[in-house]
Image (cartoon, rainbow, N blue to C red; front, top):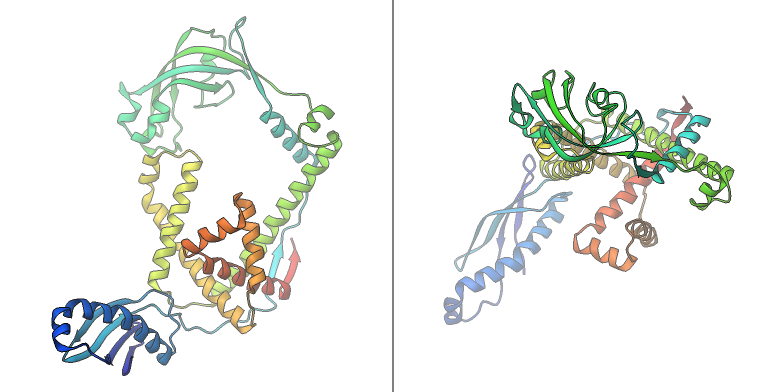
Length: 409
């Protein structure tokens, strides 16, 4: 059993836990034989229990796992250890009801509907081989190319230049400034099998700084010519997208765009509220939480860049920039979480089990997984409480919106 005292260092979030002893010691001979095993087992059981009692006594709001140090325990002295933790910051809530925000007006133009139809048509585009004529504007030329600058391969200037340096089978849309400014013009009139020498100047604002403004020389061979054909935008086309006719498809497109714009508008309103709270509520943040959130944010940024096709070399070159962005975003997210959490406590907002179950079902459906399997996965990854917190903070933000003064832009 535990008995004793806890001493708190408020500036460091440290607890010195002392005078905790065990009762009913084993017989001396057995204790000597298994002294190390007994000591380790006693510490394993008593340290968490004594830590919880010390936290409760000091009324600490612990927000990180404890770092246990300076453990002292032997037959001749009681269990003593120091636990260092991050605690929730103390701050005064600003006025959070009646905040003024502006909501963008949602408007949809007819050309946006037509543009969306064209995008759907692009998804059903077909490509036919062209064998009886030369390349012309609007074609796709299948080419093999190799680029150099100053007589050296482009990759000598930067590994990130690999996509620009060489490709054995590249589909190039023959259009103004496609690939590089001036690259397509010399290919117009070329036939399958032709080789052209192309000289271009890489733009000064090019994404690979080592190549910006340099002159590049390309040897390009035409492997094939493709002509893109789009389907007719008629009722038959609409049926392929599960609409009765073209007008119904247009109506569905309008509804989808409107919903997306409303979501964007709502997001901007929420961000305005959060920005005001962040500006008016400065306080020190627990480092461990900021570091963990920074790591998560960096992973998200890198994954997003990879999905966009950004080369790993380019991502590594921008690691400092990515870290700075991730740190800033993490600090704002952690600060907002503490503020909204306090508002939820002030307003006695709660998350019931049925609320959690509904969110689980929605998330499982988006992930395409059975609810039971999805819930088990969250439990195994210790993410269930995170989901509960998301619901809580979302409701706190909903409350702010319901009491805000919203002006239409």
